Image (tube, helix red, strand yellow):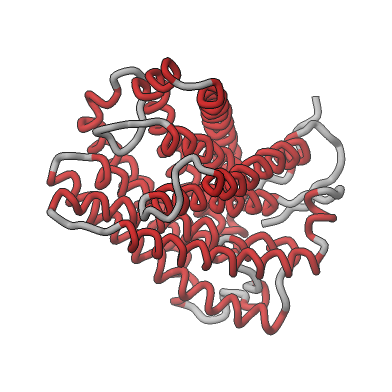
Length: 400
């Protein structure tokens, strides 16, 4: 049997394949989050879903079935691709190519590993909520372990960032500015924000003050670190792109701001919810405007990225054409992120502020946009997996 095309040309960017699958499981969880009543809990659990199935109409049951199946399929795919990547990454570390990677701009692509690990922890938590009965009765015991897991992943991310920045900032001329003509160096900020949103989950869900306070502080640290890194990486990358144009294979990275914005938006909303433990409050109108600003920021970068990708013919070559690049998986995250944030904007913003009625015509019209992004990304994942993981003797582009 011939080896898969991806395995022939493995690079750490392939962790984004696992990340994208995990993100899609979140898009299906949005159905349950906003359509299933879960009184007394910030998220729906197995018992809430079972009750909704028993009393729900046919459309509700259909939505529940799609959501449950989607979560099961994509959490499985997320873990399968994570295990494959960890195996390939371990093999890569024994080669000379890994040494070369550690001494190039592409060293930052190693942050795709902690990014994918953090996504998998989030995905497993979602799977637990949906498929494990009575999980909520022991959830307070799970939060400290979850924070330990995110702490370990955060330490891995910070260690890789420290090695990278220590190398490029302590010596002159080791960072190639001419190949910094993309947003590829935003990957560390992406990883930091994913760890941060994981830390913020106990802040929103726990009733134990010390757990909430710890989650608030640690999630704030990673959010601030992600914002600082984003500012530096964006500014320097724009300067390089203006000089040298955007690197063709790295074109999808122009959209990386979109998932970072969604992750940080959820992080800040979780923190606001956690502040209720200490008598902190936020009103629905403020939440609606916050989400509107974040969504607007995403649309700006969506327009920028699509303009460049269209001019370069990226979709024709790397998505619908014969060329392959691991960076193509970076296209999945923006669509997933838009789908998720639109759902939050509709339900936590417009509905909560009283602008539209839940399950009304306007509600479904806007929600249809989110579902459209979601299923477009499902199709994209299927296409990319067929390109990169099918058995073939065709040559792939060894992109980093």
